[in-house]
Image (cartoon, rainbow, N blue to C red):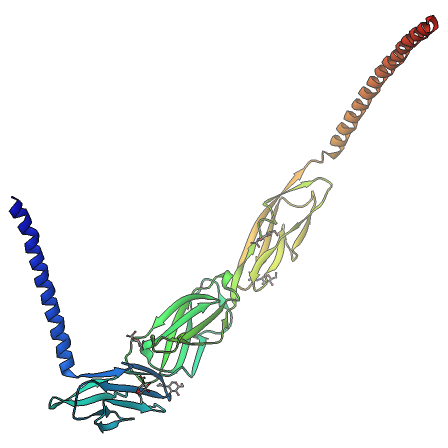
Amino acid sequence: MKKGAFSLPTSFRIFYMWLIGCCFLYFSLVTGTHADECPVQLNPQSVVVKYGGSVSVNCSTYVPHKGMGWESSEGGVPMTRDSLTTWRVSELREWGIEPMCFINYNKEQCTVNLPVTIYKTPDSVSISTVNHNGPMMEGNQYELQCDVLNVAPVQNLTVNWYKGKTLVDQTIFTDTIKTPVNKTSKLLIRPDRADDGAQYWCEAKLELGEEGPQPPLTAPSDALSITVYFKPIINETKLPSIVPVFRGYPVVIVCEAEGKPEPTISWSVNTNNIVSETLTITESTPEDLFCIANNSVGITTRRVKVSIQENYVPIIVGIIVAVVLVIAVIFVYIYCINYKKNRMGHYNLRKPRTHNGLLAQSL
Ligand SMILES: *[C@@H]1O[C@H](CO)[C@@H](O)[C@H](O)[C@H]1NC(C)=O
Ligand SMILES: *[C@@H]1O[C@H](CO)[C@@H](O)[C@H](O)[C@H]1NC(C)=O
Ligand SMILES: *[C@@H]1O[C@H](CO)[C@@H](O)[C@H](O)[C@H]1NC(C)=O
Ligand SMILES: *[C@@H]1O[C@H](CO)[C@@H](O)[C@H](O)[C@H]1NC(C)=O
Ligand SMILES: *[C@@H]1O[C@H](CO)[C@@H](O)[C@H](O)[C@H]1NC(C)=O
């Protein structure tokens, strides 16, 4: 039993050692093969260069060789016996350049490619509305367009869409073309009244990785300010649906509406149309009134009911006067009683004094 329990971990240990051994063998084989293939090192291993910018990359080796150099349509370096050779271009203007470092080693020649990314910031970034001019109508759909001219590489381009300071959309491009291109990104919007005056803009961003410029290059468009027309809305907090009016006391009511363009506000009384925000209501005003707010987008109406109230003021005044009178009578009555009591008190107080006087006299 003990022996069996011990032998299990041992076999595991052997298995692990075997596994590690295999891995080690595998990696040394792979790296060994790699080193065998081409024993040169590029520094840096890849470059990101602005169009027309300068670049230099070292290719070095630690092995004895029969010559090494750079093969390139620009900045090629003839074979040298040194262990370091530098590819150098002061103004790189060749899209799709593919330099490679070669070495004559072990009776053969091998090469290592240098990945080169040449970038160019856009000539212009502009925003526009597609097939539309002038104000937009609330609830309709519109298309905005962002044009990015002459940018490379498009694979690393992102177009960001902003409304004010908020990022609302992003477009990425998957083309692998290396030369500069024109690109268009579109954005569908359905503006509402809150968007009136909103500023849309787009931005071209080139994300070129750690070797590229930091922070990534961005080019913004101008802002496109949109005007949104919308149907009037009548402010209901300022205009109750039932307006109480006391007989003999006219009331002025106000109908306020928000809309774009600025609405025309009128009151419909019987068959008359009174163009005014305010209306004076008396007991002779009909019970049903309508406030009408219209603009080029639409018409909004609100019904207002006039509720004529009897005037209770004289009655209330009468009651108050009566109450005051009753209170006054009660006060007078209480005062009279107190006055009597006080007089009696006054009379009573005299007694001890007389008594004192008597005492004083007796002393
Ligand atoms: C390339 O090699 C030269 C000479 O050794 C050195 O001065 C230079 O800094 C190296 N450049 C890079 C990018 O390593
Ligand atoms: C990009 O657009 C500009 C202006 O419209 C034009 O001159 C240029 O040829 C275009 N470039 C490409 C690559 O289509
Ligand atoms: C450019 O974009 C591609 C695709 O997104 C990415 O693989 C590549 O690393 C980017 N280039 C750089 C230099 O970051
Ligand atoms: C209506 O009027 C009130 C009081 O002035 C105001 O607080 C409110 O914002 C208005 N509502 C609308 C929708 O304009
Ligand atoms: C809006 O009201 C104005 C003034 O009453 C009037 O001239 C116009 O025709 C009205 N528009 C609509 C669409 O009803």
